[in-house]
Length: 627
Image (cartoon, rainbow, N blue to C red; front, side, top):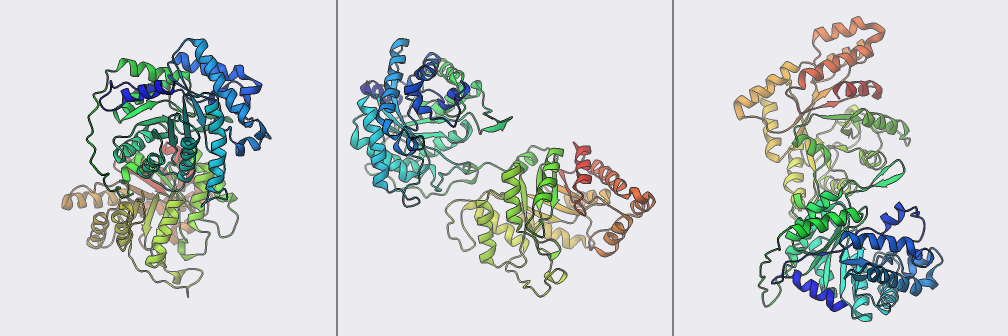
């Protein structure tokens, strides 16, 4: 029946009828929903509990799938060895194909059976210890078993490493005459786990000999549509398949949940077809309901008028592996919220002075639960020795799933360190950066420490926005792919020298600043006057401004800020209120801060709250009042 598949495939190509082949959805998700633990070997069920696997196959056939994948995703020597089942490799693969075939025949539907081949579960050389020839031998064992069981075609899927993908396809082509589909998976950044682009992945799969190439698993339909378009642009005459997850998985009450519903998949089935997919289906989190929705959408849509693609005599040179920023990575949550015109709440936190992060994590967790959108992590505040802000951002984002903004001072860094630190931050998943000069070392723990710098804040903003975010470093050399930093800068809305502050602001805007954080505001009217005056001279600022709000804690605290901290002036009425509050000064400080937020909320895009003395509980009260 492999000839049937090739005929179906021919109809999806340019000059065909425009039909779209529908594959099935997730097997593991369905088995788990029937009580099979993820700790079990799903493939062994072909031998020990074939009826539960057969039920899943039958549901997908009834939903309208034309291709059913055998329950053999992990039936290779390396994965089976973990369960002591390596000696049953041939039996498990054979049973998987024969079981799917029996269900298809019993259903009376004209369904193709694909022998499913997943990753080996080990790293391949040169980035792992398993040599390529050993990987090929492992794939060959599974390929031979699937072909001997008379699978109509082979599907090599969910491969994250192109070295492994090439080995799998070559093994399939050398040991079986069936058509081969090869599909890779990508990270959230739109790259493979080893950093390869969709364009490169497409070329490697095609050059390896696959008949159909594509993408599966990864994220939801939106991400895979972007990746499909990039692969199709690289190889317009190639045939593609796409099987997305039902969105990014979330853990809810101990269960893995996927957000994308069937209707959403039905809509995307047509988008995939329009983008050039010959075969569509679903991966993790999808169910027969998702496949049924795709079937309904495909059947209801008119045939595609495929353009005839004229291929040149010789292939064009490979496009440079640099992706447009908007296509490679999604915007940060902070960027999305500000772009949507929603009021954002940022809270500053200082890294610990030692190794313990327990208090910081407890505070960050409380602030996130209260409704803070982003945690701003200061870098060596007041030039005092602290844990690396990079480490704190990474820990907070990984353990609490709260987005962070990394304070990035230029002071004390030369151009080499600045750029290396930016790459490190991006590799850790940190995308929001707040560029500042930084406090002079003369006021801190180590006044004798070097205080030099090669670049001022506006220069660093330009380096990031016009350099790194376009894929090049300061010297113009490619960094492989663009970064996706959302860059903030400092703004003083109550300056003593209006002209100087305006000049600095315009320089930062010209460099490409995305948003601004201000110093603490105690006179909202003065702050609004600055923005109005700027607008009258140069037009609206056009960038989000998050106004600094610093909760006062005591009379002594007020006097210190007012008399000793440059740039902070606290109006006399506020100083009087704090003085009269006595032992309730902390609560009065919260009330004052809340009132200030309410005054700025009509015209500001957000607030930047600065807890004092690690009193995150007081700031949480303010966040509660804003929400």
